[in-house]
Length: 82
Image (cartoon, one colour):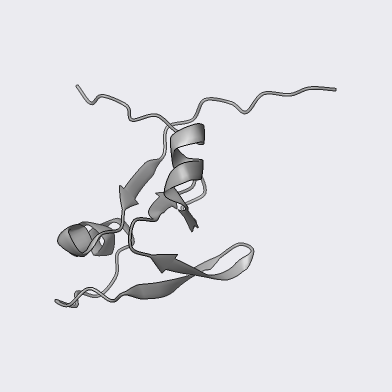
């Protein structure tokens, strides 16, 4: 049987040193001024590291998980906001 993933809009932010504050806001993290080279986030599958350039996606249940840029480009498209 073949199935297709339902089109669901989720929030995402690409982690870079320039937008560290946006990542902290997305994840409701305590503010820290200096972006780390990488950091870990607790996902439904366990702790996963986030590196510079990875996307952080907020899932439909409010969970967070990292996604490598190559996979993100194949799986997601940017939605234009009104």
